[in-house]
Image (tube, rainbow over all chains, first blue to last red):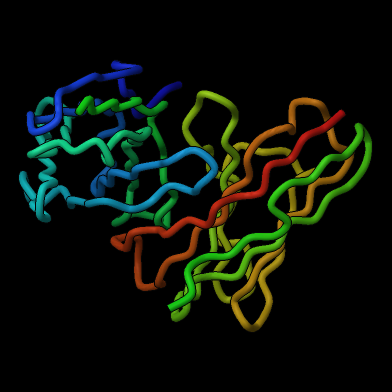
Amino acid sequence: DQQVKQNSPSLSVQEGRISILNCDYTNSMFDYFLWYKKYPAEGPTFLISISSIKDKNEDGRFTVFLNKSAKHLSLHIVPSQPGDSAVYFCAASDAGGTSYGKLTFGQGTILTVHP
Amino acid sequence: DAGVTQSPTHLIKTRGQQVTLRCSPKSGHDTVSWYQQALGQGPQFIFQYYEEEERQRGNFPDRFSGHQFPNYSSELNVNALLLGDSALYLCASSLAGGGYQPQHFGDGTRLSIL
């Protein structure tokens, strides 16, 4: 039962353009969503999060959008840089319930930014 | 500001053996969670420790157990190792006070079972 899905295994974009990574979820109890970036041989690095009371959150080049009715979120990276090349994971939790921050992850999307 | 540290980095064991992995949380954090990441998959939640008690558990057998010490560091123990236990084991720490806190990960322990 895959409660968080990233349907695109990979994405390739040109440097300077926008990267859009997508994530869908099925559990309507999820109310806190996060994006992580992972380089080989390193642990996931926290990028940005959003709670279900908002529909957008920005931090520098990174913006996360949440569409609760569609149970969909996306991460926009503008402009994309070669150093952004990594695996990106979407994660969700029922933070306001009894899950105490248990994160459920998607399978990841490999982003490649070409110079 | 020290981040989450895990040891060892790599470990090779044989089937049936037991293993202990260790984690020191980020400075100021008091909650530790453990995840298992198989190749090509996202991390899977094993359990979370807070105030030296297991607060929540994922869908893992009792062979997986843990402990949290008064200094908030934690251990993950796996008994009767199976080939399928080969994975990257990640520790994450966060602040208590509900789940609206991002978890910060260490670089993991790569466990290989022969």
